[in-house]
Image (cartoon, rainbow over all chains, first blue to last red; front, side, top):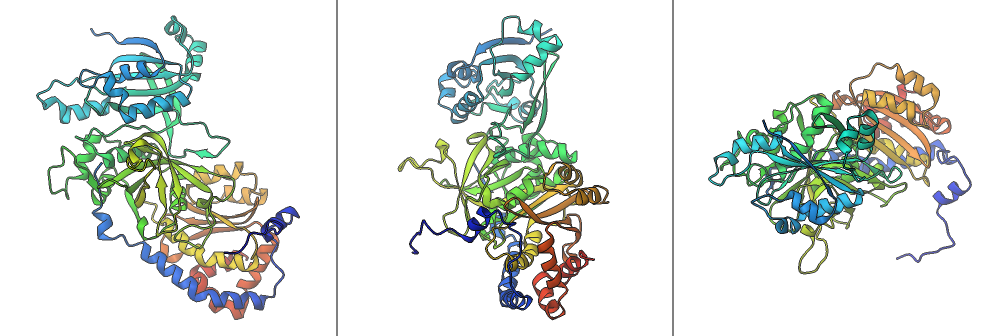
Length: 68
Length: 501
């Protein structure tokens, strides 16, 4: 496990302390952004398929009895 | 001609247990009754000072149950009940005379905490219970699935502003599933003008088609039977299986925000499942966990640390803490004695199994549809805001609720408010708002009555200029179009691109 470092603050905290608009986009090129998103494509597709599968309710759940 | 007795008693355990007792259930037995003990503590927290006993009282739900079953028992059960009213002040001897004046009635109303119907039965003595909720604790506690109840007391009209009726199961005509539905139908009747059935009527309609044994005495309902009962009152059951890994808190929040009560089915340490009617949640100012099971999209459920529900084994608005043990689903913890393991003395967890939401038939888009659409969309924001804590507020709302919120939410800019207030919208909407540290990036409206495969976006309000400029450039980049379609779906990609036109 990573040792805690009380002196080190997260980027989120540093931005909040500086009162920076949190929705100010990071300085990065469009090419970098596109490349990162391309890499995530298969992960997103898997997540979407998992959500689609979660819509199906099993027979076991349909027959689940509330008895007390 | 009969006479209604009105007697005033100081509030304490002995008086309460005496008032709840009947010839079939002694005050000593009441004092050992878990729900009665919970009510005593609940009323103490509400700072109850006195009890006004109205005797006799005819309760419509109990009367229906009585006519369906108890009247044909050999033992002589009473047809009428007793109603206990609670006040946060002491009532003077001439309270009745004073109450007949407008000022006196207003004073009585300000101290009125609600009532409990004491049923003349053995063991299942807590009938219809309408009590104030705990205070909001500066906005932390929210009880959206509540309504105003008018209370008529010998010609005086009192009210309980925001509550949801509770009763314990009688184990004959109603088990937990029936009374959970009964509580839910109280609120759906207000929202959608649907029927409110008595517990015995719910059990009968639920078991009309699928039940293979005798339905009464009731030994509980299965999920399919609960769905049948929901259809019988003119609603549709939206059903989710939680054990498959869904973001429980965000899912519940999304429906509760509309004011819809939700039935939560849980597994406990005891055999068989248990149904609880949820009416509210505890929403903290910051996240109480870093992620939710079943989603990579950070949603408002991350700030919810507890749920409030009518657990008929415990009492009204009982607290269920959300614990995330790292398994396939969240678990809930209740400090109620019934869930405490006798051997270890610790609370044994409740494992959510199913969620049943009684929705209006026109609400066809589900929480899972919106979660799916946000899955790809959220990545577009994260890639530009890698170190920023983003949070989606996803909720079902009515058009009136949306337009009221536009006028009260302080983050809504005038240009957006004025345009949206005059927008022609469907009755039900899914709304997804991206927040970060008090700032709002985008507010998206989906038509909840639309077709899921068309991704029915109604409007996209971009509320952060620097962010929207980057997203616009990305979506308008020809080299990225194919990937964007794959990430967002072609329909969502088109809608978002058009939103910049």
